Amino acid sequence: MANTILLVEDDEDIRQLLTFTFEAAGFNVITRSDGQEGLDTAMAELPDVVILDIMLPSMSGLDICKVLKRNAETESIPVIMLTARGEEVDRVVGLELGADDYVVKPFSPRELVLRVRAVLKRNAPVEPVTKAASLQMDGLVVDMDAYKVLIDGEEVLLTATEFKLLVELLKNKGRVRTRDQLLNTVWGYEFEGYARTVDTHVRRLRQKIGDYANYIETMRGVGYRFKE
Image 1 (tube, one colour):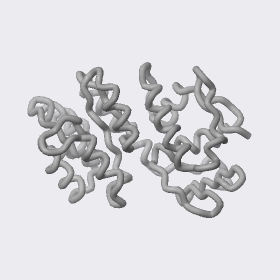
Image 2 (spheres, helix red, strand yellow):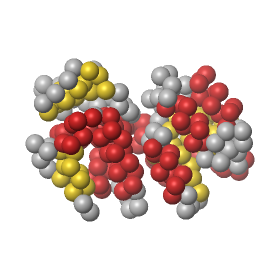
Image 3 (cartoon, one colour):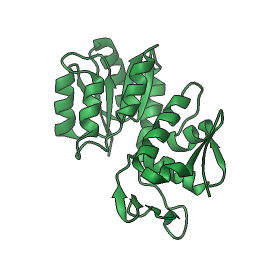
Image 4 (tube, helix red, strand yellow):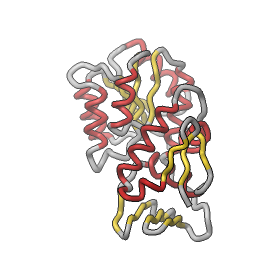
């Protein structure tokens, strides 16, 4: 069954181009040009991926992302933000609000298709990496079968990206994982200029795992390591 993309973009030329590109790639596409209409559609249709322009009539893409990530029914839907070149603040804010990825305009439609495929793959269930089907460090337990993270018996809600990031660090505890390695393994692609994506997600992961945040060490200029 084809995945459904909700594209919220007020530029008609970009909407038409991306609709053609994604439909040719085998996706179903729903388009909206207004922010509030886009949010209403996302809540009603529950698409597989939402692509949001930041500057939209009636409601910004950042505000839409914020609402989607705070709603139980939509928080797991991957969100990709479209930003204009140089809007570094908007990109950082988008990631802080829970966006899974961002693409800078002007962009290649084919690159955006690859990003959507990567984010869908990233949000697919994680295959168990050990026979025990769980990873553990003291009171921090990652249940691979149930797709849950428990801290001292209490469940901690992580996004799919945060979950896979934690799994990758735990699997390699004691070893440094560079930002490029994490981008390739967790996000599904590698390229220059996106180290901020990794840093922002690590910061959010640390905030959610409380006292266990100290296990994730920053190796300046290199990447991150989960302490043994």
